[in-house]
Image 1 (cartoon, helix red, strand yellow):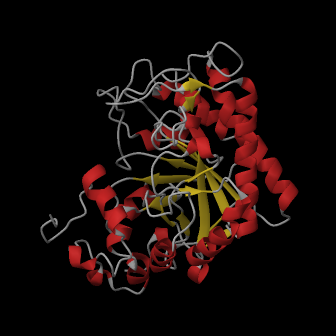
Image 2: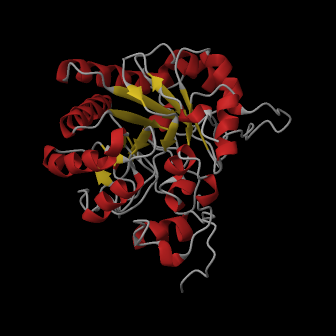
Length: 377
């Protein structure tokens, strides 16, 4: 079967057309150089996995040295990274795939060891609820304004490097989300307190990025935003506030909204009596104003088509794309029986999966990679 809806093209409001609705989501691969430069291992990984999907969203890149969240993380914080980023964009754009650079600041989700002795920063001096978390330093208003400009400069570098867009990482407990969260944001100035104030940092970044795009290029450029709908901390982000925020986001100069969840049809983490999938609630709230990307535990063509049938515009496929870089090509050619859903540790080099990425997947994330052979000791 080749008439799947996810194989159909999509044209954004800015005029950019993507060849299909399948997306590789941002997946941490911990394979950059220590100071943030792109490695040849990464370039090989990008080129091996590109070419089939409509959009390929990169692993996250920090916009400032203070935003580094883990070792082996990409950086877009300085112009000196441009040559490597240009090679990266080229590797991701094979066969018409659109390359999106995800940009972020880790905020409190890092530590002084990773930051080479510097204290982490965040909206407020509140530690994350995780073992060994360090208490961050609250950013000053001047530092906040500088970071907003850093996101703009990162966007300028993405344009110069040849990427087709950027995704603002407002999810997964990182800095943009930390400003929105009542757990990590206890500020009493214009950047905290009310929902309107907690939205302000994200909206200022979106505004700055949009201004930089307008000033840097006359070509269409995609600006996406990733969001995590809930937190389990108390106080923490709940769906009611998220839906209000999404209503605001839908009116911003964005091109898509990416919903970060462990399962595409996940229900509320906090209200277990609510059986309506969160993505359905968000689709209703957005009401067609922005295209949505759903992600989480999608492996088969039937899984992907179920997302389309739910009225979602794009489906992101992560771990399955690591196992099967030619997933889209095999579906499009009617060769679904050849799709690889399991893998051997002997396949790692063929798949461009570095030892660092494999260690991250199996030892840090405990991801189920459907491995048919024992994990090497």
